[in-house]
Image (cartoon, rainbow, N blue to C red; front, top):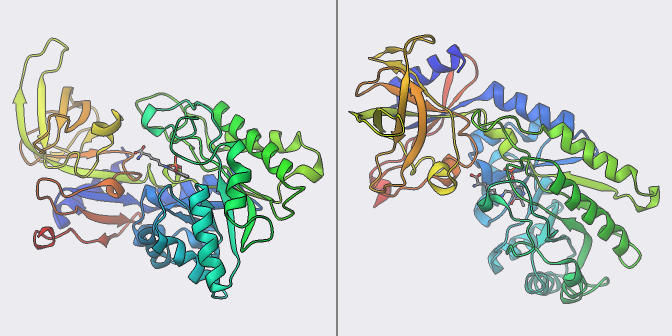
Length: 419
Ligand code: LLP
């Protein structure tokens, strides 16, 4: 951990208490720039808000050339609060309600319609078409395709497998188009949307899905002249520092370029889009907690300490939910900044929640006593976004660090807000 970030975490814990999320804003901008350099225009880069929808954080992305994907009315609102224009927001998600479909129709009635709606089923196509007909507007849509590939990731993060609930199978596509009013109805059929899974360990399944998407897109083009867009979703992994190296976004972009080059010019899509979430916000986020208990234990597996923090699965559920591993570092030892080269020993770090799965992981840590500070790294994606108030715990404070100054991005929740 960089010494300046460690100091920023200590300062913000003193000022705002714990648990607390700290976001290293220069790192966010560097990671966004890496995505842009891998997928420059004409690629559309749509930030997946679900990874971290905090408007004061994501508000930096429209200015960096990103649009957004929103999966609910709530995310649509959060996207607009962050400054994303409708024309750069795609509405998607497995379970859109009538209210959410109607919001897309309402936007289509203004000069600033949504970029597109990604349809998950024939039912959804029929409902959106009915609303669009009622309002007398046209709505741009993609169809979410289940590519039937088995990606290299944790089981819970693989959504492109044929038995997953996401998207329609290729042979269901004509039924969806028919249900949505066909080629001459109120929906403008613009192309396909795919997403094979998150935190991909290799490029292969993503490349196969991209190829499936390209082929199907060009096959449909004869009947649907506007069917010109392939949104390949995301899956770009980040290094959690505990699971070896992962392919960089550039490797995915190279695979896509190869696949496009293999097609005749007139079969290539006019628009290509990616939807990175994790690769933009994960590495910039640190979850800072405070030691509540240190118990010396002798276990067969060599562990000698059990440490309980004031933060756990309520703020960062990934370890408990997926067995995900995050780096864990001490910010202080006996109340002083933890030395980089002092003695360490293995410890298990647990949270304070009344669940035995409430574990954050294991790490080599220096001597720790009650009140020492600990940080969990690479926590900016699916951390705060998936937090909950179980056990009567208000939301943690969230703070941005620009390299010099700390700014509150969201205040700590209050106890009164739990009632
Ligand atoms: N596009 C679609 C359609 C998605 O479903 C997702 C993530 C993304 C884009 C963004 O994927 P990313 O760039 O972040 O890999 N809670 C899990 C991750 C769930 C991902 C859900 N979909 C975790 O903590 O790892």
